[in-house]
Length: 84
Image (cartoon, rainbow, N blue to C red; front, side):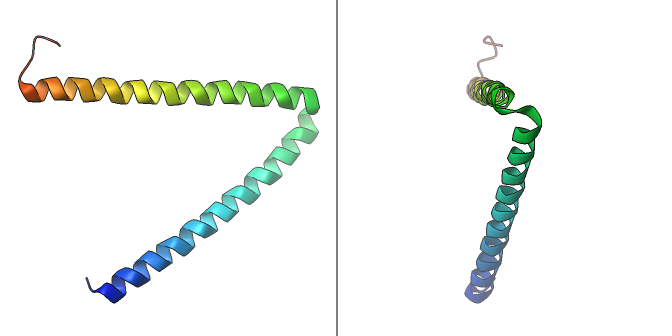
């Protein structure tokens, strides 16, 4: 590929990513307003706390899964089958 086509491809991808980010931000701002009106202030706070805990545990689970997979792959690469 030529440098000009790479540059235009990067610019197009950048603009599409900015558009997607703005669209996602607009949708999330609108839905948070609707959820706040539907639940009320106190229940919305509980909703945010529960969502934060779920997000924290999903990140923790994903990182542990990746670490275990990396460890097993490394040991298999060394030919150490007794660990498994």
